[in-house]
Amino acid sequence: MIANETSTNLASSPSVEGSTSTNKTMQDADFAVVAKWIIPVVPENTVYQNHCLVIKDEKILDIIRFSDLEQRYNVKNVIDLKEMNSDTSSSVSSTSEYILSPGFINMHTHNAMSLLRGYADDVSLHDWLTKFIWPAEAQHVGEEFVKVGTELACLEMIKTGTTCCNDMYYYPEVSAQVIEQFGMRATLAAPIIKFPTVYAQSEQEYIEKGIQLMEKYKDHSKIKISLGPHAVYTITDEAYLKVKELSERYGVKIHTHLHETCHEVSEEVKVSGKKPIERLRDLGILSSSLIAAHMTQLTKEDLDLAAKSGINVVHCPESNLKLGVKGVSPVHKLLKQGVNVSIGTDSAASNDDLDMLGELRTAAYIDKLSANTHSLEGGEPVTPSYKILSMATINGAKALGIDDKVGSLQIGKFADFIAVKVSSHPVYDPISHLVYVGTNHVTDVWVSGKQLLRNSKLTTVNENQLKSRVLEFSQKIHASRPQTSLTIIS
Image (cartoon, helix red, strand yellow):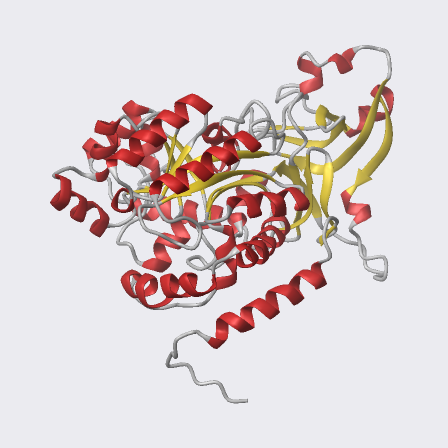
């Protein structure tokens, strides 16, 4: 459904449906952003054409027709993206148009591992972990690794339209400082694992550090803390029960890997006589507080249990494809049963990027392939593009418990939104175009009304200095990387 300047039978602007902007008195606003199309996500499958987003005090004040803006608001700054981002050195008029969308919420990341992008490719998952990733982490992970790796991740996420991430890695207190500096929103999982690492020596020590973090950030406006038991094969029952208690006491989410591989499921059955999801059920972990990443190996009984318990599932298609885990999450089946499904990239070491636009496109294609291309009734696609976009926005917000604040472009919510440049034409359906067309490019990003990316350039950090730090650290990592069959001639 598209609302435009002349339509009377299609969706109306939000301001026509009860906004205070219908009052005759002019209101003040900080700024407005004009775009050809605005996709609010809520209501779903709706586009506002030739409208503008009006912002005041970090929040969305209105979405109205651009032609009505001067009659309704005293706006300090009107941003016309087509004008602002045009190439003034060119004599050729730009045909590019812009889409405004809610910022993407990347629901499963290991941000610091961006320093291990491309460290090991084209090997089995077992070799990837045991011969490359785990030895590299044992040698290099520390506060500086996490700082520089998270900086690199934030750079990439902002440039590709992510405004909020759900991260799990060591030294989350360092990640929090970096993400706050960049101006993003995040939920950071306090890592818990039964093995000693450079970060902690026991499950109890991991948990104690998590408690300290939850206390420190309990009132923070953008940074939230969750509990991050790594997976069923790396956590004891005692730790899980403590996690459940703390989740209920502090009202925080639980972020874990679940049913990622066939091996994980079969080994748990051998050890406990239960599948991983059944073990968590018996421990009382399955609830709306649980965010379960991957969920690729699911029977009908598993699907029923996921739906009944109200857990949140994170679909990570590109990582699953690259690591060859013999399956992807059956998104169409989960959604059909009412399960809240969001999208994550996983780490840049297993993806190898944090680009949510690319992840959206892959998720849409994989969904059709896994469901035998079309449903049986009428040949409609299993999961339409607007549902895929919801998975990358409002569904992630629901999983994190912040859907009253972000995840859609609605009056009263924080102004977390992005501008996407559309250079490939024609455009018949802007939502479908955003999901399926690979030439779209994020140019501008705002979080709580603060612009973090302007015309593809970061506003909060010095990008060149950051890249120098990344290069310096990556050289240390490269020196200890195992030999591969690659021949480099210099």
